[in-house]
Image (cartoon, rainbow, N blue to C red; front, side, top):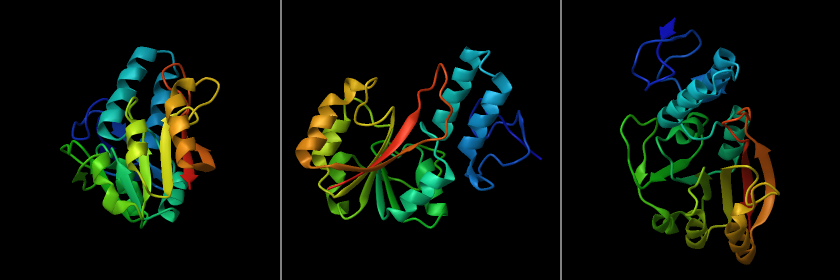
Length: 211
């Protein structure tokens, strides 16, 4: 049985996790982040929102800001080759590579304790990779409009809170919607990610675009 803490980084030993080790990207056929989030909701049952928020924030720091499932990873592998911008610690890139996908992960800050190798760069580094699908997970706002202006490829996948680029409750994506319309982007499909929505977490969607 492996023991480690879900409330700190991966190298601290505190809490029991019989199903996966600290450095495992997968728990069986599921990403470990999906397993950890499910366990958080079991442990807290949403009756201690502040501790749940703290624990989820630490998982964002150690893994990723959005939780994929195996199905979305397989869809991304099928959409490859991929260039991911703003890859963070490289967790999504690790999952895609583990499933045999071709991905180049880029971030303007190359951190320590990475899940996968990263290249240093930003949206201005994308031009040589326009034959790939661009993946952007939880882009900053403002910031996504600038990324869209620099991306001249024909395929794009964006992961955001709420349907992108806008829905009735997420009209803040208006500038991005106009930028995408002007550039001729068409929505091909969208997927709801597995993380359960609650008081501190909005539902996240992956949207697939082409032009």
